[in-house]
Length: 109
Image 1 (tube, helix red, strand yellow):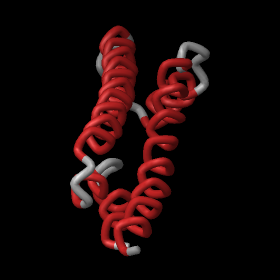
Image 2 (cartoon, rainbow, N blue to C red):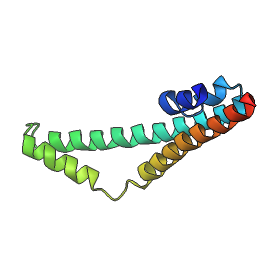
Image 3 (cartoon, one colour):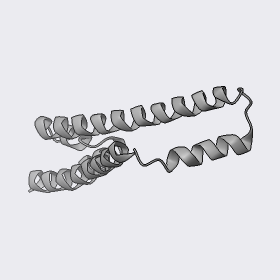
């Protein structure tokens, strides 16, 4: 159960490292880090685009204009990489927990 908690609460693959299954743990950690990198890069790109639009409008921060920009950014159709990265990260988390449970049960027996 400790391995499942490590994989579920800390990071996908951490439970595998706890169980000394380094290759599986490293693979899950690497996939998760790449997915997180894609998500952070996408968010930074959207934030940069929003700041550029605010500067073009004269730099005045108005709650309504910022709300409109955030809504437009969240409804953009070019978020396919972010969607894929989110699905991969969720899959890594679920696979990490299930596999850590399976490996822990096998180790206990």
